[in-house]
Image 1 (cartoon, rainbow, N blue to C red):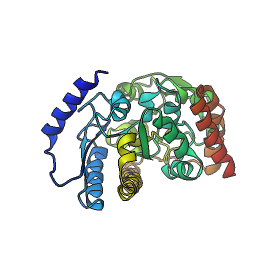
Image 2: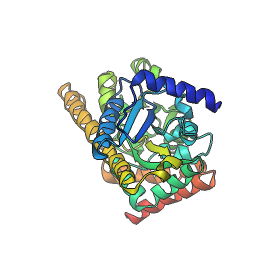
Image 3: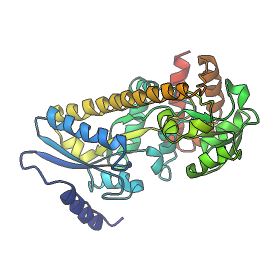
Image 4: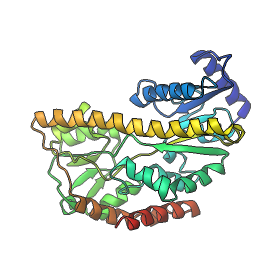
Length: 334
C-alpha cells in the first residue's frame, strides 16, 4: 500500500463528507465495511454523536462507508498506519494475515446469542487474545459487536440435528461448509444472489443466509416456509478498533469514553436488530409460515459437532489460542 497516496485520498474524502471542527481536540475518521444506506451505518452516526457528547466535544469522529478512503479489505493496515483512525468491520476480511481473524469473525456453531460472545470476551479471555493479535498491526481493540445470530432458511422442517441428514443446502466454502457436512447435510456452494432462485427451483432445500428480518424482507421465508429461529449456526462479528498510537496518547478519561461507547454501541445494535427480527417473525407467522425453534439440548448437540471442526481451522498460534478459549468457555458453563 502506498501510504502517501492513501493519506491524500483519505484527506480528500474527509473534506468531501464533512468539515473539520475547530473546537474538537481530536478529529478522527472511522471507516465501516457497510454501505451508506445500511442500518448499521445509521447506528454508527448515532455512536459518533454519543462520543462527541460524552467527551464534551473534545472528540469528533467522521464515520465513512465502505471503500470511502481505502478498500474494505485494507482497513486493518490503514488503521495501523493512521490513514484512518478506526474501523468497524468483519475480522474475517483479514484471514489472509492470520487464520485467527476468520475464527474470531465467525466461530461457526459457537454462539446462539451475541451476549455469549460478549461474556466470553469480557470473562473468558477473548478480549485479551484479540487485542494482542491486533496490537501486532498497531491497532487497539475497543470492543466487538454483532448484528445477531443468523436464522436458517428451509423448505422442509428441520427440528433437530438428525433432520439435517441428507438435506441439500447452500453453504459457503470454509468452516460453515465443514460443519454442515459433519452433521450429515449435503452442502452446495452457491453465491448469495442465487439462493432465492435455487430454493424456488428445488436445487436446494435449505440455506445458510442471514438474519431473520432480512430473510423475511427478501421473500426467502415465503418460499422456504420452515425457517429456524432463533439461529445458532452462524453469528458474524464486527470489530471496533482504533490506531494504537492514537489510543496510547489519549488521556484516561477519553479512553473511558471510547470503551464505554463501544460497549454501548454493541448492546444497541443487538437491541435494534432483535426488534427487527421480532417484528419479522410476527409477520411471517401471520402468513402461515412455521417458525421452527430448536431446544437448548439440540443446540448443544450442534455445538459439539461444530467444536470437532474448530481445530481444523486453528492453524496459527493465535487461532489455536482462540479456539481453546471458546471451548474452555463452554466447558465452564456445563
